Image 1 (cartoon, rainbow, N blue to C red):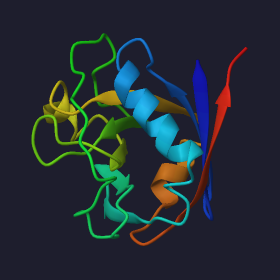
Image 2: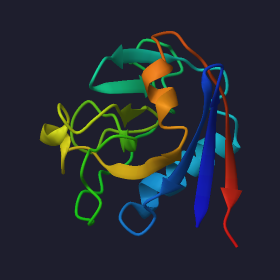
Image 3: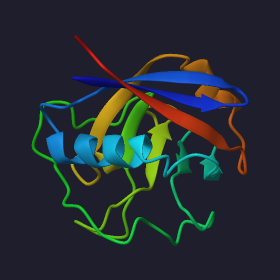
Length: 146
């Protein structure tokens, strides 16, 4: 079991992963984070009361890691609620490195079972509301639970 800390200038968001529901998506995110892929990338898309999105190496929403991963939509935790991390994509099975974190459930229910939910912020949830477009992901620290 892995955990993550997403460090930003606005604070740290601590994340538990949904490894049972989205094992390949979690493994991909962990691999990218451990290789420092996300360090210095921006939250390029911030839509109030919807999501903050980051993980694009181009800073525009058009880039990725150079490969795609399949969606994992069948698990029990596939509901977009406040603090949920989910994979962004340009169509089914086209995700890679871009992810978003939900502001609330109010405007995200249509994403359920269309985008893979793979974790949830359990501490530092208030940081989601402080993030603005262009804010950087300083680093993502991955830890393994005992």
